[in-house]
Image (cartoon, rainbow, N blue to C red; front, side):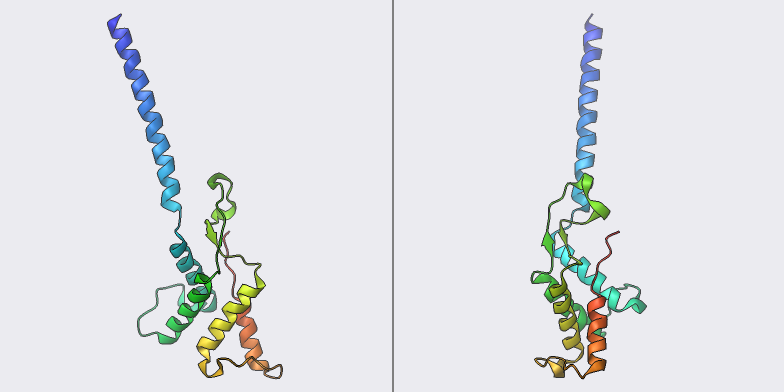
Length: 154
């Protein structure tokens, strides 16, 4: 009789510990994939910068690549100042693993601010001067920048 009770207690304890272990493992997996706002700002900045410069193959920038660094910083400044939206989603129903802090591809005004930031980091002498309608070359550069400002989550 004593051995039956002992074995039932052992089985109950084992099952309880197993359940807790699985619960902690699942919870830690979600925490490990969660990004802070700052990490999301950097991730989105890296992605958008990579769109502008596919020839770099999304590698880290070297400290002597001043123009690239200026562009990256210009993108990050815009993203950091309201370029991300927060939406706490259920991890089990999150499409394409979109993080809590994400960049909205449909925000035209944001894409225009990003294009402006990169354009004026490339051409600082033009700062404060809008592109005139007859400046077709500058307009093409700006439109190309704007059209590169998207993030692929899937």
